[in-house]
Image (cartoon, rainbow, N blue to C red; front, side, top):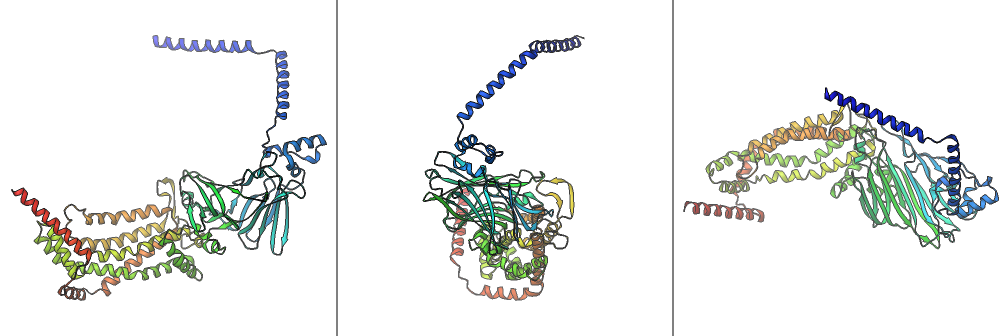
Length: 637
């Protein structure tokens, strides 16, 4: 009862407090006369502040200052005021012009923005994304390209804040787009774009005329290029994995910013910058001298695959441009197009190095062998069939490796009874058993390493192909069987939920590849395990580890490759099927165990000279055996 009274009293108290507050606000409400007087006082104060602000106006201006300005409608007093505020650039504001200039070529649909003079939209006419939407590299203000400079009267200007004067002319088959920021009729800063038929590279120059007295050359003129990579693929996480800022500097060094995280660098002597978006790139190239210094950043914009993100990464680059006699004259190239090795290589600027073929020998194998081979095969075969044929050729080329491996296994199988006898004889002396085992294997020419080393030779090929398929532009949107796009995952079922690391779909090619690798590993690992003896003391049980790998490797492929290019999974599926076939052929029709046994007996009868490594190993084992015997003697004492 007391708790109820307390609750009621609390409620009453709140009501009373609320009533008092309402009454106090009512009492403090001004009368209509007081409100009118207050408004008049406020208006006078605002007008006084505006008058004072105009007298102390800052010299840095923005686009908002000129958005509605039309100097042709201004009287002489207003013209003088604008001249004082903007300086010589007030002339640019007086010129008429359309907000957007449209230009079309065989490969582009371009829109040039009068404000800032640069591209407002870049559409690639010959490509669409995964949802049949045209490919745009620049759209919806995802890109800024401007110059910041100081004038001789101490003002800081940015080209994006001022209108340029557009003109479009023809020079033979080429289209010339000139965007001029005019200080007067004979003084201007010009962006000049030359568009060639069927060419993704735009010849672009920045030059000034008659401005040697307008620029403050003691302050640098800075080119600032920002761009967000637009999503074009089904899986934005997979696309983002191959979206990177890449650059070449010091003549031939190609490097990249972080693949997934945020990153920044300051680099000297930059030849070109590539804002790569997996299968499409925006590249800025220097046609004369390298950029002396570039401050570049990359910011990851993809946080979750389930979020319908529009952009992958934000790239920024700032680079000073040199004055020459008080003027600016920089020759550049702007590439907007496919990240295709054949297309990029045609410009002879090493732009194809922006494609991640792999480092060192892996990249060399791709560029020297697989790109050429696949290009040849896909020239007359459907792309899926070309992958299968290339896989067959690669496996045949490496079949001698499998032969070496199976020959080694056959020798070890024949020696197994003798090896088991040695282990039984020296079961209480593991070190001696190991010495005798090595001696027998050396005499018979059946070292386990002879099977491992050929296998290591396959690693560069496998890794090179792992890098090749996800970056092969020719596979993009090419179908095969149930796969709509060999450069993306094949989906046979959509899941109503997302499984971490797996995704929200079921891809069939990874399942087939996982099954094939399971049976291949079971056949090879089972034979190797049967030939092995019990694990050595202090050493891991390799037999048990290999049994785990039989199940772990297919599971890893099943999960990891579910979001990868279906062309890569197709390769692994066919590759493992062929490996199984080659293994059966070698085992049943090529390797004759009786002949192998005869060779082993002949090898045993010949004196074997140990190499340096074998002698060293024998000495170490002998020393270990002596130390063990000495320890046992001390224990007995």
